[in-house]
Image (cartoon, rainbow, N blue to C red; front, side):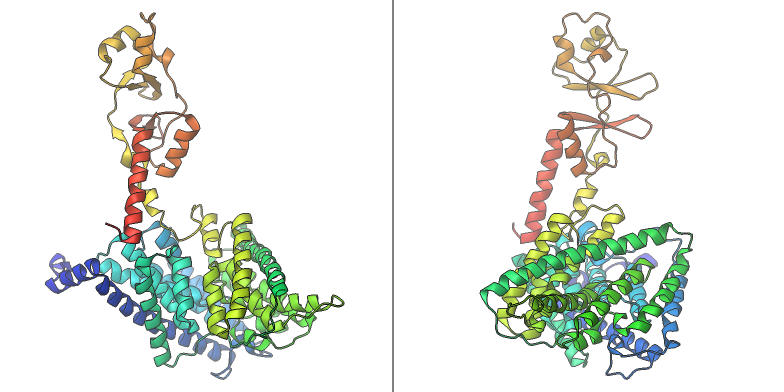
Length: 583
């Protein structure tokens, strides 16, 4: 009965064919995903703001990080929120697998995100931000938008690349809705979630982000867009100065990511139970928040107060240090969220500090604090989050000023280049790297993982005992029958590989064992090795053929370099066809 209920109806089959085979149909599907993402972004933002206003007792028009002071009793919301996260950790502790986010899903799993993971990541981020921890909601937005897109795409049985594009469109649409910035959301999808910008993905992604922004505006959701105006007095030398600020932002971003990872590692190795860590982190945040509430939450209210606020250098440095410390403690002790908006806020502070320090040099033309804040904001966000075009377009949609956007783009490209050269990861891919993953972006490498030695090997290759006399070997394996034979000892363990031609070339064969001509005794392949590692093994050994053996040393099969490279080339061609829609 249940199988009959799960069987697709004729209408569902028609929808699947429409969205799989029609570009116009896929764009319509993307618009529907965008509307859903915009609605989810509005709900998440409203719930988080309601939680904060309830816990900290401020008016609905205010922001937590914009408050001047907070009653110490209200700050108990931080450890209480941590305890709630701890309860969730205890609930899911038996699930060994870490929840899949949108970047990992597109890079390794073809866009497939389990519904449980979407609920878990979005819920934990909502609680973390709602209780005031120094994390942003952007991770929840992207996860919710990408998760609902993945769910719909899997239901419709979309092709792998179409599902990846739809997930990127959903995540970018949610980000665009939160910031009221459709171009920012679209390039967030391209640069950070999909990992590529192709003609085939432009229309569905842009359609989704526009639909999401319109949906959020219709619902009356307040956007995060930064209200700032450039000085309009920009000269050629400003490009050089702000390029330097971009490089400084890269160094600060790398340091921030490493410090978060260091604290995470120290806390993980401590005797603290995992469920208690967020609550302890919340207690540590209390004195930081008592010094400056600007360090709490993502920093929306604080950014509007500080950007162009002409704060003294000491005040800027203090807020910058406290916000860094609060973000490091929040993430290091287990609060869930990201550094998207926190990096924007920190970058704006860094830019103003840069302008203040520049003004201390005698005889120089002072920099505009607002311009420096905009450049620093984008530069540090690129270092942490990635996406130079994403952050440049965010500034453009905030200021509507192409001149400052050109300078911002220069700084973000400098920041991005230095981070790639000296570090190589964004914050999300860095944390995946610490878990043992190899991805550096959302580009699809999941297909490489599926091509393992076990899957590609030729089973039941020609084998012989290593003690077999050469004369018997020649009789058993005449020239032309096989080019190589795998040897095994009396215990059925791999003992090397012998080329058939080498045996026949030996004129003094007699009763000598064939093992005397064996090669590659210590160079083998394990069955779970992926195609990338297999090609590296062939390159390092210079071998044409390698045995695949199990952990006990028994022969499972054999792989040839020629076949492996052909499979790799065929898969690359397939991915390119899927990516660009070529026949």
